[in-house]
Length: 434
Image (tube, rainbow, N blue to C red; front, side, top):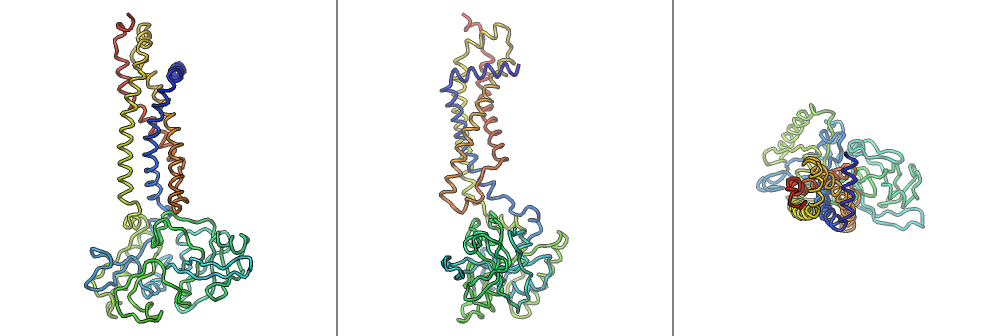
């Protein structure tokens, strides 16, 4: 019977091809509008480090002025000071710990065929790489250096290695930059976490940096302060060291714990650390330490804005409009073959058989609508990549989303065709047979 229903449905669709195409297009347009916005929400809120996102934490300490809030209404700053970053990293109370900041400087390759360029640099500690599972193409990172030690080494991004060394294994090569001679110890593979959870100073989907150097080099060479820099002190002085000794925050601090059981232990350490700093005249406000894992941090930062959900709800309303239109068109389509259905009823076909045939026809129209919706969705996502280049690395229509699109289209088609199908099944054949 399945083959029979399928054959009848295809003949009816071909016979009324213009109306069938209009129904499928209406469904596809509504599905595409919903899937484009849903895809963005799904991809923007996806766990960027699923293997251990519940064990990697962002650290916030409230070193702010007693009479003001770093983040209203009364939250601590999102970054920490140089002093706190170095103290907590050197204490080694977690499995991994790393502070980091964005900076920049001139890179002057030895090869005269490669022009000098301004490189965006991430100054960080070596445990940044294993903590965030950064993939390496060649070489590796470095160990955390003591606070008073510095070594001129660098890790290159894949694109920078291609630009400077032509993509070869450049580990051991030297690279003149920042007025010094750096040794290449590693080259990253393709790596663009989206959202860029470990530092969203320039946005959640900002491209990764060109080069990675030990954090102490930022202080040694007095590199610029990039990203979010906030101060509540007014008289800092002009020299670089005064900034490092001040209460100005500029460094993102992350730690990875070996297990969930260690969280309370680390919170106790932070509590003790702040109490110790209070005895030195710092942290004038009540202790307000915040430890958020990656997904909690993304929620705190509102990576998926409320506007995106508004667009999704509007797309759902548009889909409802498309469903009403599709239901009306299906009613017209099924009504046009009332005489045929009446004849089948007179020859012995029961209401269930007629309903099954109509159901088969709506499913086929839904599959056609899904194909149209997928094509429109792909075009829409490509348009988003063109308008917002920072989204280009993660905006894709993966297999789960494709199956959701197909299922949604078929379901919407069945819903739209349910009332017309029931109406056709219950008609009295006698009037049409006359």
